[in-house]
Length: 139
Image (cartoon, rainbow, N blue to C red; front, side):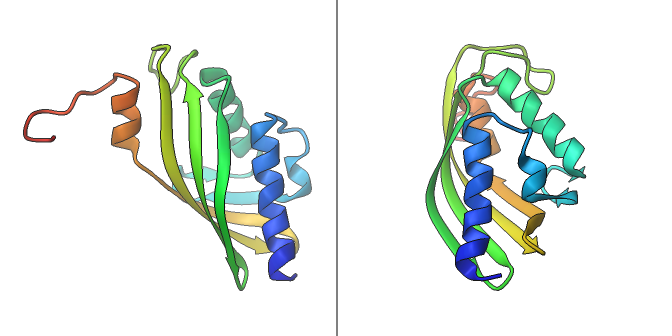
């Protein structure tokens, strides 16, 4: 597949996330997809994770800011925003908004996403939700 075709596949993922439509992601994500960052294996595990995110952050949105393709990989830089209105990984809703930068790498094979890696600032995310506070030394 061409680099532009690979980028188009990743853009479909962002569209699905931003419309919270997980029903069609099997069209562009492999059944045996591996999310190396979160330890998720399989399309169904990815759908369950997405459903949990949408329940916890009903206004979850990811703005694609950069996209780069090389070989069978696509890199993205995006801005994620949302409001914590539902339980998230055992954390009760805080009602607080967050905004964070995210970098993702996806590997594509046979027209589908087969692997993914993600980097975000989890400490800053938890700080924005009021879950943690920085100490004077940590500041």
